[in-house]
Length: 140
Image 1: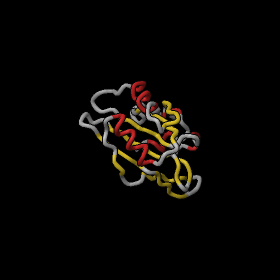
Image 2 (image 1 turned 90 degrees about the horizontal axis):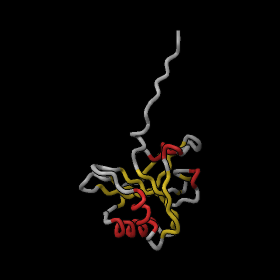
Image 3 (image 1 turned 180 degrees about the vertical axis):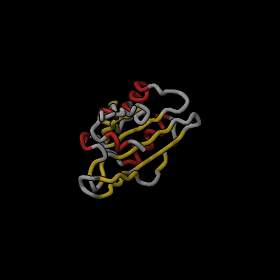
Image 4 (image 1 turned 120 degrees about the vertical axis):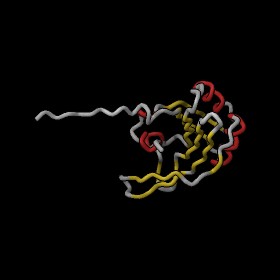
């Protein structure tokens, strides 16, 4: 009997803008600056946890979130914790800004330019989550 393979479409799973941020400031300081620059109101939520199969333990990362009136969701997630990295292939990145579009698609380049204008941000760059080895860690 012939084998059948079903290919799943992961495009909806990774339907968000992902910006890597290198910043030596504390998470709450960066969050405040992003709130002012992007006119959002991200607030601290419970830590974002994932289970690491390699280390056989849960890892917790600081997590800030805001949902706008247009259903755009802004999340700031730390890449580093005491147990390891959220995205190990980007160890130089301190934080990830995840923007899930609601009713309208935000301007990626404009958003990136705004983040880069923050004085505490050393660099910021766009990433494609579906091309990351551990991109599944950003699906929540």
